[in-house]
Image 1: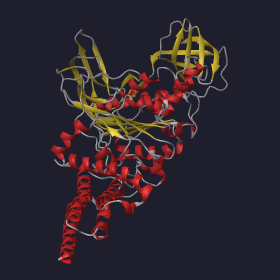
Image 2 (image 1 turned 180 degrees about the vertical axis):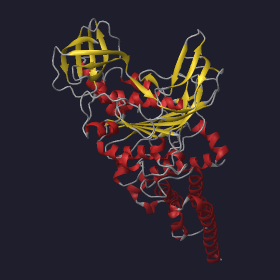
Image 3 (image 1 turned 90 degrees about the vertical axis):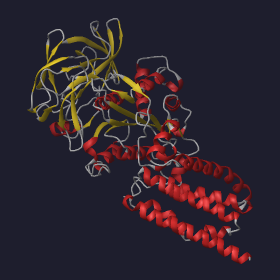
Length: 592
């Protein structure tokens, strides 16, 4: 129905009068073109509307139609493998209808209403169910079982439940509520994007999210259910890091949000993911991925909603008991959209023009991540890990978005332009980055990988920090002024940097490293340091030690395939022992 009329248009902001009966965050259709928008402010009978489409040509006097509902996403079979825009419009469906350019005002259901899905119930008539209980399942892709849940807030006894093929809007079960009302349950449910989905209890994270990236998993791990930020200047590899995490992270479902990034970066995702094989299942990565694309050439207001759309979809899969990883690239572009809308609303600006509520909005987003006990009677557990890229202008980490993010997240992977310039990728600076999950994850690592992992990591960080201090001396007086033990420290740190921390995202073997291989590789590199120190103490020649042929084998060890790690690494360790012992015995014989 017509709710009001436009009185002012300012870019994506439209102000309409006669909106006294409207509510905050209601979705409206603006003008006869029916452009989609959302009410973000109300004063008396005037509503400020952020429009998620191009507003060129709109003028005062045009009608505004209210839907009376908040901005919501459709949740059900059909999400996986689909690419949506920031307000959950399916881009491939739109392209098939109107071509490559999105027509203004186009109305397309987010999920396919025609496709039939095979529904298999897991409970029978007479079963008492509550919100969150799983009543059936659908095989959405070869690797994802879509669990159909009772919508939150509904409880009662199942009167009827059906088996067969249904569309997402057809009734698959009937529930008689406690007050006698019978409710039809379909496979699709809707949920407002700005409201977090309910859970029974939030738990502390305990297990790591294995990413296959050595610098992350070994030095700065993130827990399943944790939150992390990847800040870095232009060209330092934020997007490649996000892509690597989306490809290889140990998650059942990946939600990738491209909020305000360049279109060619989303194109890379779309062309690469279908062809890449998941290391755990052997199937295409798209079979467990949902993509939200709101590139820099799309309307700026929709960036703001894209973050909420993505995290609501991620929460929905977490409710099924899955481990979900969400990548947001980047929250800086999202914050810029907030700043633009805040400026047009003539709000009092905060630091660098960002709204004063920037920090609280970021916190609302990140706090929706976590490890939880889901609602429902079975007490299943799910995790949602949120990883946000931050793009500070000029790499200035003191700017407001980065600082507000660092006050919230517990893992900081600081990308370094100098490392990127030297072609060291991932360009994560090991002296600036940190993880506050280390103490929690050490027990899991000791129990599942190796008890001496923590000691190896401590020695690695010590060597890297000592190298940084020694480099200052080298710059002043030259490397020849250092003692043999300090030279060994530099050599070991160089091996850690080049042979362990440096990782080629485009190499078939090196792109992903299991935890077991990471442990064996680091132990192999540090074995040279430990044995070298012992050899120097026994009088071995430093130059001959550094020139041992086994050094080349250690440097190439990261390219050994996972299935050959045990045999090849054992052979290298044996050869290292033999060559060091041979060097020591030759020195002893020469002294004698």
